[in-house]
Amino acid sequence: MTVIVPEPVLEGSNNSQDVENYVKEQENDGDLSLDGGFVVPDSNAFGHSFRDYEKEGERKATVEDFYRTNHINQTYELAKRKKEEYGKLDKTVMSIWECIELLNEYVDESDPDLDEPQIQHLLQSAEAIRRDYPDEDWLHLTALIHDLGKVLLHPSFGEQPQWCVVGDTFPLGCAFDESIVHHQYFKNNPDYNNPLFRTRLGIYKENCGLDNVTMSWGHDEYMYLVMKGNGTSLPPAAFFIVRFHSFYPLHRAGAYTYLMNDEDKDMLKWLHVFNKYDLYTKSKVRVDVEEVKPYYMSLIKKYFPEKLRW
Ligand SMILES: O[C@H]1[C@H](O)[C@@H](O)[C@H](O)[C@@H](O)[C@H]1O
Ligand SMILES: [Fe+2]
Ligand SMILES: [Fe+2]
Image: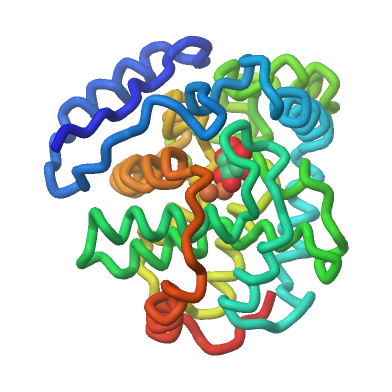
């Protein structure tokens, strides 16, 4: 089967040398075992290309308004504070499946490609990855849980606003790359004019490793903290996927590669695999929850404790 993988978008990155190296590495990385045979559809449920943030349509205004608020409010200080607060995992105790069911009531305002409840997105991506990688059960479960951090929208988490939970993520403490969606709205972010944060590296060192980078706060980092704090037996690649799946400026546009260390570079291939299923399985075709539930319950049992602290 032919796999059509989208070309990385290269315009607007801060350092063209890094981007060139990045592309070379991708081209040399011809590991066929990572090719699951997934065929990328031409258009989304609204008949547009995926991730077209400029296209006029029913979701454009909502999504743009989301990014305006997100870009103004996501500061280095805020991200540090939220990580500290939510890292305590003292808000509630529940199972993975209970959390999945809570997501039934939320639609993601940052998403131009989907207006279905989030539980459908989780099952759509998990079922597709299960078809193409039948033996990698950890990957099926990773897809199922990757967006569970969106539970921050729920009243038991203080009903966090969408700008503080969803959307693409980006590093804080260094310059905002132009490849970030609706980059223009950063002008009103207090960090934008902070001399410490304005440069390519900002407060970071070359190749310091993504683990040392403060990302904008949202569902990725939160779910990573939940996994870490509750002792799952999922492999390191699952942690990396969950933590950085919204970091499109890196995995799609090739920006900020100079913050990665060797371990990150190695892990990046899993993000590329996962991203196809995360993005291109968004559709109006619903998965029957009750039908697939027993399979996923068995995976949850294998990799997670029965109750988790959130
Ligand atoms: O709109 C989407 C959505 O919020 C996803 O869950 C997130 O991972 C993406 O990066 C974002 O663009
Ligand atoms: Fe996500
Ligand atoms: Fe997702």
